Image 1 (cartoon, rainbow, N blue to C red):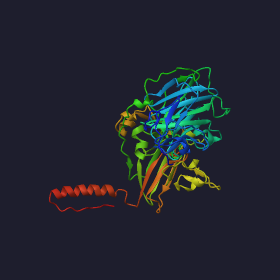
Image 2 (spheres, rainbow, N blue to C red; image 1 turned 120 degrees about the horizontal axis):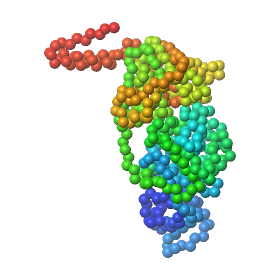
Image 3 (cartoon, rainbow, N blue to C red; image 1 turned 90 degrees about the vertical axis):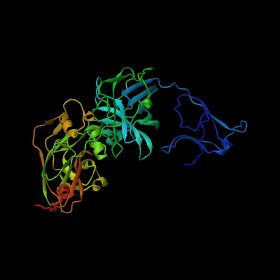
Image 4 (cartoon, rainbow, N blue to C red; image 1 turned 120 degrees about the vertical axis):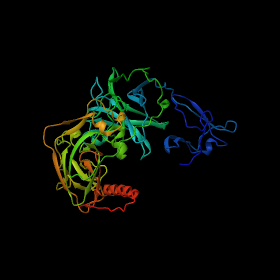
Length: 489
């Protein structure tokens, strides 16, 4: 879109400040008059987004004012939001106002472009409960280049599989009852204003907002997946509210925000742990465990996580090296009860860095190839074959990944909890034509696994052998000896 920048009410071309209930007067630049323009818009230069515009009629009768045309905007005065709560210290705030049958909210969050902020009614009054909660997930959609706020229902804490989990209402047969009013992103803070009906008349996925009493709320910040849907937040007090926060949405002057999020200084995260590697092993155990926060899954892979990940031989998402034509065994302890999707993680091997073939349909199914752990029925639907009892490495107290520098020390803060039953079993002979890179993944959910490096037979340990031999050769050279490399089969 091409146009001419118009100065604000004080003659400045700096980015606009926030306005609420104000009348302003702007003046067209130079010799432009109202008869020279077709429209006037509020335009975001950084994101190339139109936040609203008006067309100027050609037959508009406006008398000139000393050679300049001024356009005066008038709005119905409304009070500035007087209600504000800090939901997550230095990370997330909410402002609100009850306007008739609608609740209008401003969410402020110090989030990255690949993150969302979520706010809504707790699944149980009197405590912060994510399951059975009704929340709004707000974020900037970098693909569509728009600010979004989507209506979610959390039937449980698993990824949305199209029926269960943390799902947008529209994906499970409901409606998106959220109306986005505006959005902004500056100085590391994303602001999204939206409104929703106090009573949506959608009894399954929406909770009515009480206007005669306090109600428990929940708030969280987490990563977006490639569908632009919410992935799980980290289980730390900085990413979701642990304590019960109650709000009376009909209140006025309920303001406990001590400062603006714009004044908060950015803090760099901790160093990620090095990627673990497994070579020359033929038997593996696959269990579930935490992602390791800002040191683990996401910084290692560059992908959003669901808050849990595969632990192979009790290592967090190690890179596994296998040889073509060789046989490997996996003992899988990721859960075998599909009625509990948060604890149902059959293992399979694929060429997809995302996984989650169980929630794929149509053309999505053809976008990845499976190599083990999946059969297909007569209609082409995938069926998992490697599911066993559920074992999970859990925190003894709270997630301490941010303060612990090594993965080995982090493992000391975890304990293994296993349900009764037997492990699932996967026996895999690596095809001779297998590609160089595959992945072990979860059948039900995206982004739980990581890489399998596939090499030719006998090549798995060559890199290490050559490195050792190079060091030996250099040492022998220092002794003026003639080196000789000896390989054993």
